[in-house]
Image (cartoon, rainbow, N blue to C red; front, side, top):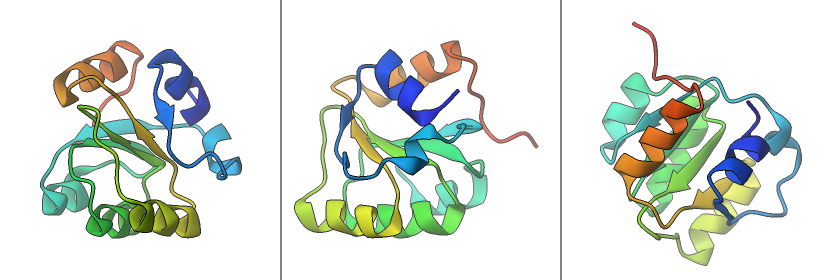
Length: 117
């Protein structure tokens, strides 16, 4: 399933509309966490991160972990400096009004899974 398809299915708000190409890539899994060391250790490459953290370190971790994108849950959204860095790194950002629990459940229902051990 592509990032674009997931965003449409979950009615996510696109916070980085200027990033196009990565949104057509297949998303291979997902991870929900607010602990960035956990994301580095456990998020699947080409996966989608669901978090309430909205600071610049989220972008650095997403880039380092090779994530397909980030969904900020509970209606959260980063400031413009974070958004600009995500555009620079070509990491699509989205926002959802739903809680992390709800977003993760909906991603699971779409067939996305966490990193296989």
